[in-house]
View: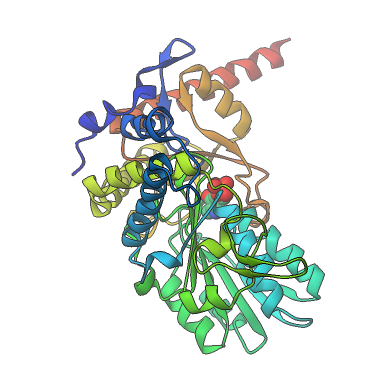
Amino acid sequence: MLDVGRIRQDFPILSRQVHGKPLIYLDNAATTQKPNQVIDALTHYYRHFNANIHRGIHQLSEEGTEAYENTRARVARFINAYGTEEIIFTRNTTESINLLAYTLGRQRVERGDEIVLTQMEHHSNLVPWQILAQEKGATLKFIRVDDEGELVREDFDLIGPRTKIVSIVHMSNVLGTINPVTELAQRAHAAGAVMIVDGAQSAPHMPIDVRALDCDFFAFSAHKMLGPTGVGVLWGRRAMLESMPPFMGGGEMISLVGEQTSTWKELPWKFEAGTPNIADVIAFDAALDYLEGMGMGAVREHEIAMAQAAMERLGALDGLVIYGPKDPQRRGAAIAFNYGELHPHDVGTVLDRHGIAVRAGHHCAQPLMRRLGQVATVRASFYIYNTLEEIDALVEGLRETERFFSAEAAGARTK
Ligand SMILES: Cc1ncc(COP(=O)(O)O)c(C=O)c1O
């Protein structure tokens, strides 16, 4: 059990007011708030040992390099990677997937080949593959989503001899669905394909073991797990990373540079061209330390409890439809819903007047919205600092939204 009261004290932003009301932050699937430990690590770096890393022989540079590489080692442990050289720092999940599309994708995919995705992908795990497929004359295939928000199992047979890449979201940012990644990885490998996992929503919310997942690549973002913006991770199997060409060229990623050609540094630096995001990577270590202090098992348990309570309490509102699996064990705590005829943007705007931050829109998953037959949904997403009382406030805010628009409609009718 998480001590949520205690945890909340570490997050200064949670004591601010919005429109005169205490902030209730339920947009965690978009980005999470940062504890003092992360904010302090960031300012500590700039105050005490700001310097460029990997280059200098002076003390500051050495300290910075050590701290930067320490984060890499912690990330490797956090996801049970085989080694630190398999951890590449990027800007975010989107860049991690683009890195793969532009290197591995260009190397492996040819005309007539297939790339298998699902209907529930975030645009960041769709658009890079569209660009690649158009360049190469390859085809994208989609595992469908059923009415429960789960993948249609018979579509797993889409993974076949022409498949070169299978790239699938681990936990949906809209439906919350947790996908059977290990099974899909085994299918991909049996077909000779590479298995990529978009872990942007799973890494912050559940224990991750890339060995057990049996995938070849796993991508996620620091900002969705208490860390700073501007830091992403790409984990990959060493042999695959070694056989891939670099993504970007420049300083830091080279070994020897001639006038016409160059050779590359060893892993992981081959994929980290230019001055990296030193301060934010260093502060990300504090975020991982914070999560490890609670234990990712406890984080997941808290979220199962929040998902269950949110689905029960929201589901009791007449006309409210929740998308995604009903079983909280099968899903994360991002709860997308629509409420009667109310437009999601109207709901989001009225809730904001009550200090409640939710997201309304297509959540960067337009093909999934079309599958659901919706243009947009409201999404409330929970994290370690959210309470059951905040769910009640959300329910009350929705009731008031409904009353407000019913009164407006009645007023319009009598005019
Ligand atoms: C499932 C999923 N994949 C990828 C992303 C992209 O993450 P980023 O914007 O940090 O690149 C998100 C962000 O919302 C996401 O939810």
